[in-house]
Image 1 (cartoon, one colour):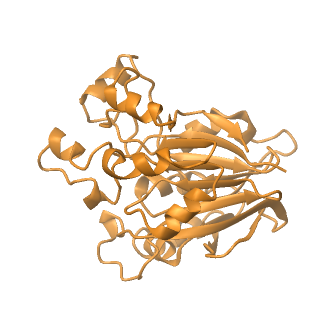
Image 2 (cartoon, one colour; image 1 turned 120 degrees about the horizontal axis):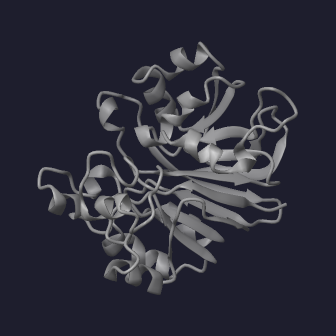
Length: 302
């Protein structure tokens, strides 16, 4: 067995370019000077045939069509190799793709209770999806558990959640479900190769740092370079910490730099982040630290 990993999308909410943004990076993407990016989602598989998605972005249809292993086979008129979804939080850029999967079979979704409550009560996901395929919710486990296929057969992978600090999304300010608004996922295969997927990190907790230390590959929150990145573009915008993301420069760079993981990759990168241009000083700093800037369609196997 192995862990096959595909980065379907690597941008934070809005993608690159963002539809209403004329910042330096969005202009460069529109002019073809830097690659465009779809919104953050990762596909994982033990056998290269049955796949799980970590988050389901609004760009999911485009992402599926860009990866032939995620498209239907010719064995039946309607089918999909997507066996389930793992949600790291309830942000719109991570969950709206679920609605695009409504026309298939029932949808297994692994999430924290807080994320389930948010989507059910604030977004009406259960009511919408029950009118189509329906969702089979599974609470994200804190201890290692088998990651099962749609028919509950073993996938060859195990997973566990790393619960992180985090607030509910803006549309759910009045949600009262305690804790678990953000999680990271550890995935491992039968021989122990381990992947950490952590696109939403509000703080570097001891549990998270331990998970990073035992991982062979780390896909990590690269949303912002600095705490005041958005504030410097538009003074009315919030700071990185207020939006639930540790900045690269002041928090995650040094931690990832000293990890023994063979692959350390930033994902969920905001359109304003100065690591995006190939010739930026900030990108050089990241790459000199042995960390990769994730790109759409990047893939590797552990």
